Image (cartoon, rainbow, N blue to C red; front, top):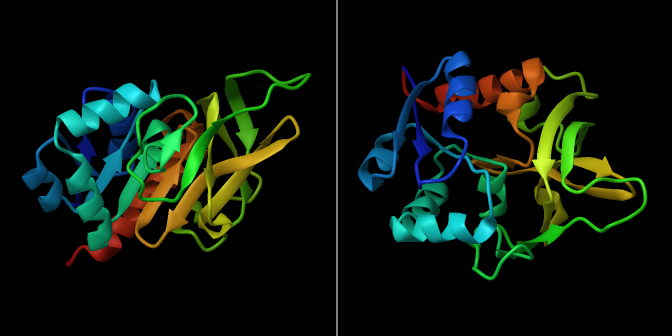
Length: 211
C-alpha cells in the first residue's frame, strides 16, 4: 500500500489531514524523521496557525533542507493551508523567511466594505490549471472551505492552479508545479469535493509507485 508521510513539526491539523487521506485509501506515517520522509512515497505538509512559529518549528527540527531535497527529487508533495504559505519567500504576517521554494510573498487581504477577515467559509474555486491532477472528477464550479487572513502571491502566475474571489480581490487558492502541489483551503473540511481532491493526490502517488 502507498505510504504517505505527514510532516510533524509540532503544529498543524494532523488529525484532520490524516482522516481525509485515510478515507482516500492511503497508509499514513506521522513523522519528523528525515529517513522516514525519504522512504515515504509522498509527503504532506499541513498547517494551521501563525507563519513565524510554524517556520521556526520546522527549522528547529531540522526539516527545512529535507523538505527542499524531497521536492527537488520529484516526490509528490502536497501542502495544505499554512503548509502552502511556508513554501514562499516570506509573509506579511511575520518576520521569518519562508522556505523560498516558490518565489513570492504571503500577503494580507485588503480591508474593504462588505468582506470579512479572516476569509472563513465556503467559496467557489476558479480552476486555472485544468490539467492539474488534483482536479480530476470535479465539476468546474466546486466549493471548498477556507479559513485564512493571508494569501499567497506567486511571482510567476503560471504556478496558480486555482483562484478564489473574496470581495474584489481574486487570489491564489492552489498552486501546482511538477510534483509540488499546495492548497490554501482545507480539503479535509471540504465535504465530497475535498475528499475527491485528496483521493486524486493519492491516485497520483499510486501511479508513481512501482507495482
